[in-house]
Length: 319
Image 1 (cartoon, rainbow, N blue to C red):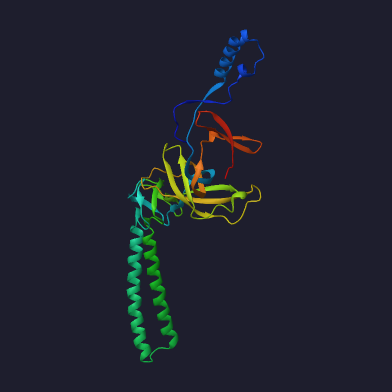
Image 2 (tube, one colour):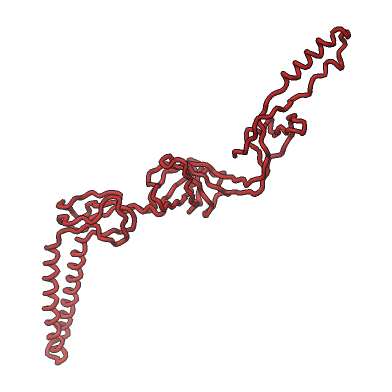
C-alpha cells in the first residue's frame, strides 16, 4: 500500500559521541578532540525518508491467473441438406435465441409439404365417409379403425414435412455473439455440417485453481478484481460464481469460477487475466509503508522519529 510521502528530513540514528567530556587527553589537545568528535557526529547523521502512519481499510486476497472463457458456446449445425440462399448475420453480430441466421433452399420441402397436406385432406374426407357408414352399421369395426389409423398417420406425415421445412431456416440455439461463420451464400451444406459458432459473453467466466489451504476462506459471492494486459490500467470487477466442493488429489487445488460483466465489450474470450479474490476486509487498521517495516527473526519493528528529529527503533505487533 502506498503512503503519502514527506520531503526528506534528517534524523540522527545514534547519539552523538561526547568524546570531549570523557577524554583523558591533556588540555592542550582538547581542541583537536572536539574537532574530531564533531566530525564523527556529522558523519553519523543519515538521511531517511519519513511517512505518516495512517488508518485505512486492509484487504486479504488470493492472487491467481486465469483465461477468460464464454459462459456458453454453441456450434450451429445444419439439420437439412441444401444450398445456402441467404446469410443474415456476420461474425461479431449480437444475436438472440431463436433469431434467423441463414436460409437454405426449400423448394423440395415445400412441395413435399403441399403433397402431404393434399393427402391429408383426401384422408379426412375418406374418414368422414367411413364414419357415416360405421354409424349406419354398414361396415365392421375393423374397417372403421383402419380409416382412423390412416388419418392419424397422414397427420403425422404433414407434421414431419413441416418439421423438415423448418430445418431450412437456420436459427440461433442460444443468445450471444457470432464468433465464427463457416459458410457462404451458394454453398451446398449437408446434414450435421457446422455453419456458425455462437459464444455467450454475458458474463465471461474465469476458472482459477486455488490451493486447498484457501478452501475455508473462499465462498460464492465474494468480490473479485481482474487485470488484463489487453486493457492496461483498468481493473474489472466481478464475483465468485461457484466453488468446487472437491479438491483435486493430483494438484492439491480446487476450482473457483468467477464471472465478469463488461458493458463496454472490452473483455474477450481467451484473454489472460490476473485475479484477486478478496476474502477478508478490515476497517480502520493502522498501516505503515511496507518498506518501513523491519522483520528480523520473526520480530517486527519500525523507526519512529521523535520530536528532536531522531529515528529510534520501535518494536511493533503485526495483525
